[in-house]
Image (cartoon, rainbow, N blue to C red; front, top):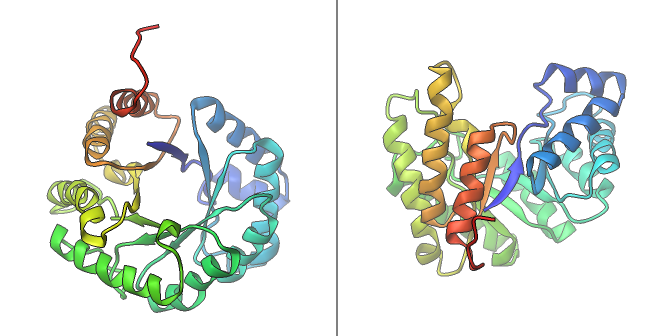
Length: 260
């Protein structure tokens, strides 16, 4: 599994202040800490960016690129911001992302063809609601792929996110197991080795028993790894979960094992 840091988000007070003041320092410091913790990619979650979207996204991308050469994911629903971010990136970024929501199909999906880059597709209904079962998720996956093909994109450009549910949802635990099965089933369903990504942090989001949350993250990562998950979007400061991902990578890898 590739480890994607989800730590850089505009909802963070320090990042929001840095953006408002156009101060790259806090952003660069956070990115360096993420890379030191073991991140292999950085997700830039800028939110919808209703004010100065192009300028703000360009600032975020430039700030991150001053601190690292890691590949980037650009996470915004604003197509103006997304376009500016893609133009600012020194190398191809991943678009994060699109779904069956009409605005995403019209304004975000075409950017993947224009910039010839990969794009994450979320298994959501057109009204942005989350499917409530594995069967529903797979039905959405078929429709999502059909719209992806209509956009004249190559299969290798698609990354699918089945949408990990919070455990605190009424059926959160059963949906979490559905996600594992969906990841296992997607290659057969779509008839190619589709890349998958999952937001690990979603599982334990919301109120709950803080000391127990890392245990659920670590167990779930192992289940996702066994199902064939390719990319883990996660908080890389969660040391226990990072250790679990790295152990899963060792167990599923091809290198000769050594305790050294």
